[in-house]
Image (cartoon, rainbow, N blue to C red):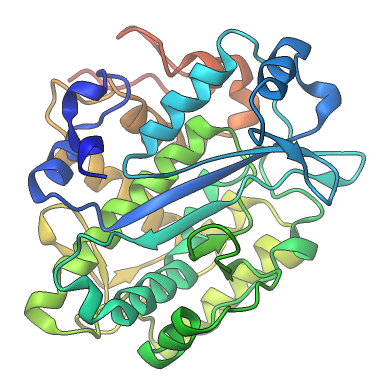
Length: 358
């Protein structure tokens, strides 16, 4: 694990400025994993042959798609670099579903074991991770979808849930083999693999996923940093009226399969309890957002403003943040999505305004 903190392992397109802070602190908040599902008939034969020469590298998921995984990793760009090492130049038409059958590219998270006093109070970290996921996760959905709404099968495999847990429930999950259920956030039991908390809705290309994971990671790390000052009740918690809006958002996004940006823009306001808001860059905490889109916009904007001008729009993280801030749809940037990872400093998206001068 410590070896992965060596900055010499990464190039400029793989690390964002904030990753240097992770290296300095020597913990990342969470470790991550990523599933990739795509239907076999869409994949280049050369890619599949390379996978088949590596035993256990890939398989057919029970629901139909061809699947492979990455993780655990500290930086989302470790996953992205590994993905492009596998793919080389054998790209294909990315898809979230075919003939009504979906491709879930799920995210996995676990608390970083290098967190302070981790092994004495592990269940507290897990409960914060769960409660942040079921609250913040729905606002991160622009980083999860491929088109302008989720695949039609999302409600079957990622049913909405917003229920919070305490340290006791997390302790039971650590002691016993928890059941995985088909909800938006669920436990993924440790059957020949580590226990994780899984987000089951994501379906998009790793370029977009990696930025969403990164945004969740840095936000969660700021939440964990609050523990030393304020104790364990630090995960984002909405007021009761805003909890209603969160349930409304989850229903519109998953059950009703409404458009992502329309839903986030129309639902709200969202107000958090004092001391339980969304920590932005620089430890600034915001308690009220007029809509769900304002929340994700402010998170993205905060990250951009905290990035030195010399790095801004030069790495894949800040480029994707700009795409989401401007309500970009990944499927409409199909070719750019594939090549944005290795693109030079003159790269621009096609469907949103150009990057501002810095």
